[in-house]
View 1 (cartoon, rainbow, N blue to C red):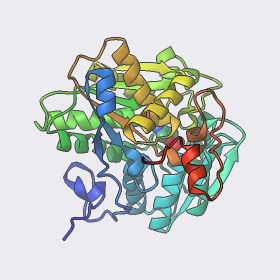
View 2 (cartoon, rainbow, N blue to C red; view 1 turned 180 degrees about the horizontal axis):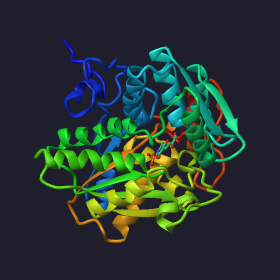
View 3 (cartoon, protein in one colour; view 1 turned 180 degrees about the vertical axis):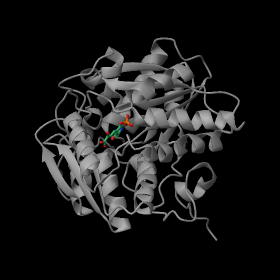
Length: 359
Ligand code: AN7
């Protein structure tokens, strides 16, 4: 019989705060593929593997944290959960709350979340409010509401989220047999950067690995508070998932960088979109712009000579390209792809694609 992956709480029950009293709210998240990427290995001289988190049930890594956060919320008797979100957290919270049979409330920045994510939150039954402000404003409101009203906060300031998300590092180590030399990851609130570091540190402490990877995190140029060293009042980037000016896990992320001899860098929107196309066209993996930033970061750091030949490199791509599909239709010159229309005629189709008949 085929083994079915049981979700991260059951698969890693011995490394998480779950007991017989914890109701396991799971959609089978985790167990995502670690895909060797020969095209990126050729481009960088390293041995590159992509951790494809778009393969989670709602299409992003948030599900690893949400299974933990919603399970613990239900264990503590919560009837409603709230989050601020640039999109993926709201999609995940809505889905896991639906499974648990509790209400989700989500606050998103008006007009600044991808259509697929908005659709997910609505279809899963969230009470969704568009706030006339940015993500940082939404998070402030969500924090104050959860402090003063009977709603349980499931943003990554809730440690249960970080705990669930650390399982991605466990999976990488389980597949590779050791930690990589470098790990590349997108950064918004820096919760995931913090979570991966925690997972790798716990694996090292338990003797499952011989080393810690250097954690390399990337923000968009227009939303790069950690790189700049100060909050950004009006963050701006086409990578709406990481359009965040005052990261919630800022201090934890700086500590994680110091622990791993890590690095934070900034990448322009045009370079993000180039990396998205390279990953899609040369490796076959379609990710949303915020996720492509880790690939862009790898290419940039390799070009800067920072990555030794043969180094084992893992790259997390956090969300599926179908969340925000408009970018796949955008050509390198900025125009929109307009597929050729042809008649129902074999010769016309052959002609349109430049095929000559067999002699
Ligand atoms: C695809 O959904 O913050 O650095 O509210 O959706 O842990 O914040 C999303 C973040 C990277 C950044 N990639 O992760 C939200 C939200 C994708 C994301 C990040 C997000 P963190």
